[in-house]
Length: 235
Image (tube, rainbow, N blue to C red; front, top):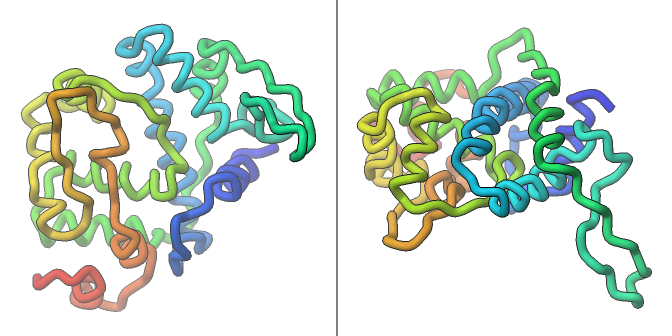
């Protein structure tokens, strides 16, 4: 199955929390497929360096469920016992985490569409008019790509370790990460509030994006003012 096929399978396996008009438009699909693989392949070596063996094994299970066609599975794997009344199924044996990482890093990156996707154009507009840093834009991009839980694996780390992971993933220093995690994006209503805690923090907690933001980013607008109105921004 080609990369487009496995991303379509991912979307079927992880349906969006609500129907978003324009999210699956051809340009936006190509944009999301391209950047999911690009950002995943940047993230995987960092995870190998940062996570312990058990965490990496758990993350590997998530990745198998998210990207199973690219890993050579004929269907989505099942790692748990299925009750007899639902039809007995023998649990699948998880792949070796090292092999999962190797195959995903080697997966081809889908091409972008010829025309600029609405999501790409709208993210550029926000960066320009809201004076967002490049790292704030990366956080917003990663949140958009993960809408519906379809891009990144689940794992927890102490806040300081998670910030260091983000710095390595995004190729910036810790000061830039701190800026990206400030309250600006949540105060603007673009992302959910991120509140660091003393205990371990999960990656997805700082990439929470509102459905209304996803909807607005996925549509095409004739003017910047129309985009800002859709986002409820006075710019």
